[in-house]
Image 1: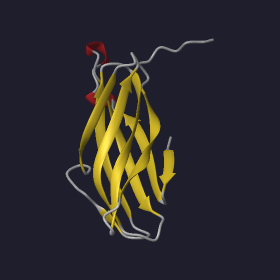
Image 2 (image 1 turned 90 degrees about the vertical axis):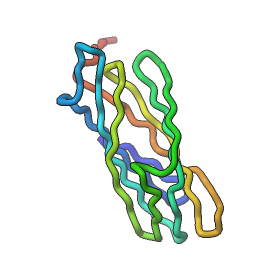
Image 3 (image 1 turned 45 degrees about the vertical axis):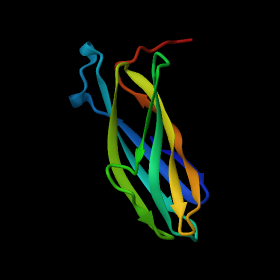
Image 4 (image 1 turned 90 degrees about the horizontal axis):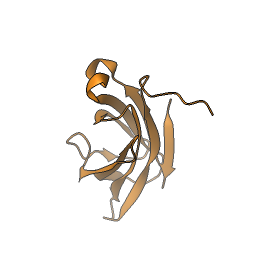
Length: 131
């Protein structure tokens, strides 16, 4: 499943995947990869300066991650360009949710935040509840 958000002509698409082979459910260790595509649909060149993630597990515990760029890079996207990367996150629960933002900067030095859509982290190990 894909999750999409567009802010100021910057479209962010996220596709999470549960990694069974890196997870240890009996030990309370669940791991997901997420592929991100950032597309510049606008007319100005922008550079991704930093990221801010909010990661919430199934118990409602929030972990925040902030830092420069993504995967060690601060990509510049000219109009029509796109940038893709894959990263991951572990959780102590079989499900959770992630959301966040990228801080972008245009050629005039103006900074603005771009929404990363909220996306669910689901594994086959979560209990199913029928209402």
